[in-house]
Length: 202
Ligand code: GRF
Image 1 (tube, rainbow, N blue to C red):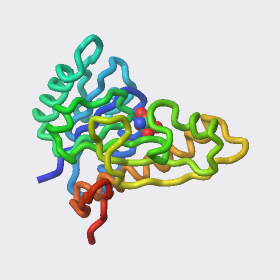
Image 2 (cartoon, helix red, strand yellow):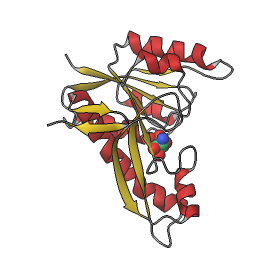
Image 3 (cartoon, rainbow, N blue to C red):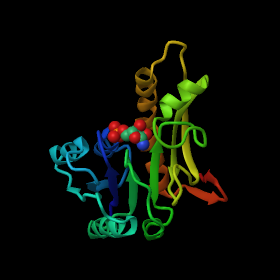
Image 4 (cartoon, rainbow, N blue to C red):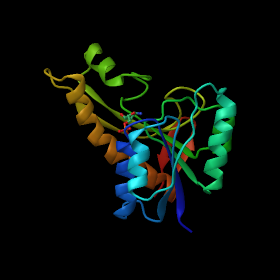
């Protein structure tokens, strides 16, 4: 049975596309993207899912209390028999209810070397801080913002003349690469979680 991925997004959807390309190319063996869900109407990622003939749903979050909203999302994920949830530019914190519904089965991609620069505009935070290396992180998701055990990270050098845009572009290429790799590792089950450490096995 194929492992079914559910993608949650709020915007552009380039990480979703990278995962979809990887699934199509066999880089994540035995996986399929079962559904893409957005909390925002008009998220470009939803149109991209439809173009690829992948089930796509908008579930507007506006005005709803966190858990009440998450119950709707979890119901749709269950309807599509999702095994692994991938957050890909999903601009919401998950409720304890959501996290408990998919224990160690939710991943997020973040454009910094966590625990540095969590939250919004991480690339700008990195530039303003003056770090020499930036990067991205794929981690398991808990109730806290950009926390949870780290599956993979990748670094990119920061150049003296970098702008937020040029740095973001360089990081994004690495995001697309390590998200695929992390999903493959997790779906193959070739890891164990010890404390905060994700340790690869064979
Ligand atoms: C990415 O930089 C991701 O790391 C962050 O939000 C951005 C989403 O980009 N969480 P996209 O929608 O995947 O293109």
